[in-house]
Each structure stands twice: as structure tokens, then as C-alpha cells.
Image 1: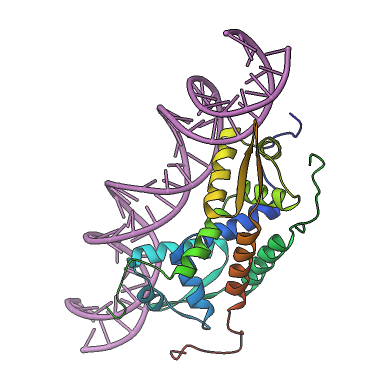
Image 2 (image 1 turned 180 degrees about the vertical axis):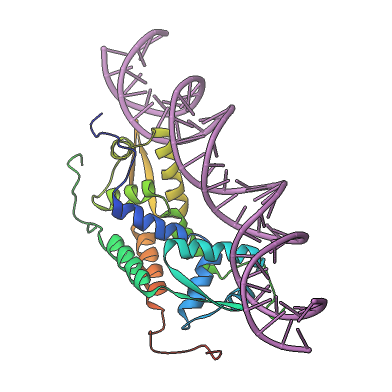
Length: 113
Length: 113
DNA sequence: AATATTATTCGTAATTTTGCGAACAACAAA
DNA sequence: TTTGTTGTTCGCAAAATTACGAATAATATT
């Protein structure tokens, strides 16, 4: 084996993958885009925007929270959600760097070619 | 119901979600980053970089191909893979726009607040 | 023709994801 | 205290994802 197989990945690769995975469903993209268009809103508002049951919306919100992209706080009897701006910026930067780190088309870097 | 539930999402939301989903696994991020660092390479080279079986690598490559982020062409008995630069740029732009479309912190847009 | 190299596909298993309705919890209002 | 509002959690089902070894296909070499 030329490269040892350690069963793990670099920490920054795993972080980007976690952000991407959280964004990997149209319902969650919709939620994020909706929240990004305002300061904050309640669970019920988000629910009304989506073509799925509230139980499912709640699950998606939990996933987005776990990924760090949104935050929620209880304002009885409602729950207010908003973008986590710190991690939003972190994710933005991670994606930006990832996509900009591509070799120009006309440069050949692989010695095999 | 205030908003009709049509079971679908906007086409641009679905496209961003598809790109994100394809990037939602560390093995696939690794593959993309590796391919982005060179012009192209063979399946075997990618395989050596990853801590998983070749059958699994092949599956991940298929997913990346289906998402449009990479391309593969047969050069018997090998297969050469490379970034699909057109869709790479498309994805880059989709993520960039998504993250930049956030309201400034000090602007309140929700009439409920 | 037999053998070696390369990568995909097959068959299978374990886990995760997505989704829903019903039940529940927490609080406010009547 | 009963009732209503809001959102989460539970229990379950169906489908998708992740992973592997073995079998296969396709080509080149001996």
C-alpha cells in the first residue's frame, strides 16, 4: 500500500462535508434561504413555507442546528429560529476556498501526463 | 393552508441541494479536492488516496458524475477522471450566491418583530 | 489461448435518512 | 381547571446510503 489507510479524513474535509451534508436536501436549503432573508422567525412561519409535515420540518431544523447553521430559542409558546451568522460565515469561507482551489485549465500538474 | 403544498421545490433550490448532497461525504470531498489539484488522473490514483475499498470509491465517483461535478473517460485498461469545470463553476456560483444572500445583522425584515 | 491489469457491477448487510400521524409537553387564556 | 396554541418527540415504515468482497468485463501482454 503506497498510502496507509487510516479510516479517517482531514478535519477540514470533514467539516466541509458536514456543512454540505446539512445543505443536501431541498427542504433544508429552503429553510436556510428563508431564514437568511430575514432576521428571525418562528417555527410556524417556516412550516408554512414547506410542502412537508411539521414533524418532518422539526427534524430538518434539528439537523441544521446540529450542523451549526441555525439556532433556535424558546419564546413560549413559540420557538424562534435564526441563522447562526458565525458558522454561516465559516461555511461560506469553507466553500469559497474549496472551489477556488482548482488548478487552471492549462496547467498540467500530474507527472503521469 | 396559507400556502399550497405542492410537494416540490424551486429548480435552483433543488440544484444547489444536489450539488451539496454530492459534497456531503468526506470521501467525495477528498476526491474532488484531489482532482482539483491536478488536470486529471486515473481511478487507481484516486483509490490510493482513500481509506476505503475500490468498489466503494467507484460508487462515490458515480455519484459525483451524476451530480455533474466530475467526468470520466475510458483509456483502456484505465479510466481517467477529471473535474467538470463547467459545472464546477456553476456550483461555485450557486454556493457563492446562496451564502451572500443574507440580510445584514442590523436590518430587521420580519414584520412580526 | 492463457494470463495479468484495471475498474465496474453484483449481491448483500448494516445504517441512516426521510416522512408521517399520533402522542406529548409547555405554556397561555378562558 | 379546562381548553387552545405551539412545537418536539415517539413509533413506525419505506427508501437511500455506505461499505465490502467476489464476480465480471474489457483490454493488453505473454
